Image (cartoon, rainbow, N blue to C red):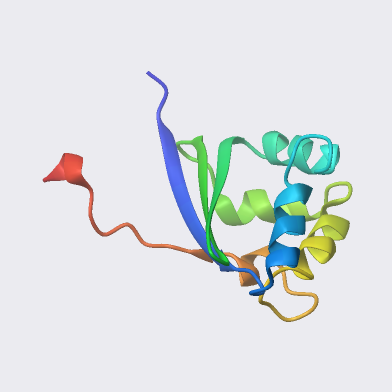
Length: 117
């Protein structure tokens, strides 16, 4: 049986319905840069889901056990079109211009798991 590790991050978008709509459109098949999807898969991400409530995002990432988040995302940052994608997405996100992905997306801490109760 294959073991995976789940990572959950949060991010705040600018509270503008038009910007949020456009941000969501950029994350659809045919709009997202193919190089971004290829890069995510190349660094070992098996699944990524992004949920939204108002202007708050929750991203759930699954990768194989042993995946090193910091190393993988440092590698991703050097891959084709990643810097361009980060700059493009930055205009929708509550962040300082030029912020890295790690500065924008905040890693959460798991503190309750029903299956362990």
